[in-house]
Length: 129
Image 1 (cartoon, rainbow, N blue to C red):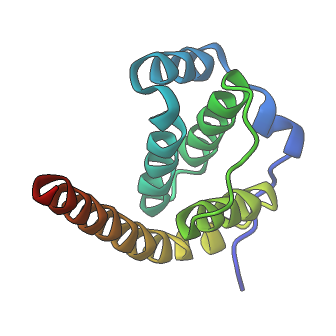
Image 2 (image 1 turned 180 degrees about the vertical axis):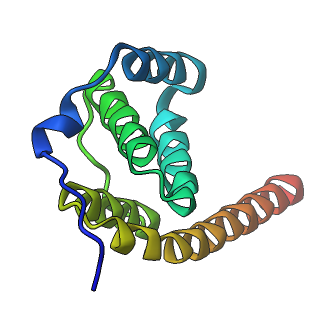
């Protein structure tokens, strides 16, 4: 049976000062990439099983979205898996969230490889022109 942890949905949007400061710093440093970086950090802590740290990472991610005044982006597979992790955490299903980590990593690896191949192809077109 899956471990279920009591997580109140209102707690996920109740950012601590430290979480807010971290989110603001990430937005300043990384701009539009801040949410992607926060997502990766959230996925990274899943293995530790430290529920308060996982929830904190989720809050930082949500705070970044709020600061950027942006709705969740759901086009890429990695975004959909991250949303599934977030939803599992909202439901207090930490074990399910942990099980999604390998899927996120595999999808991210394919995404990065595709981006590199596309850049290489674009570079080759530019040089031949």
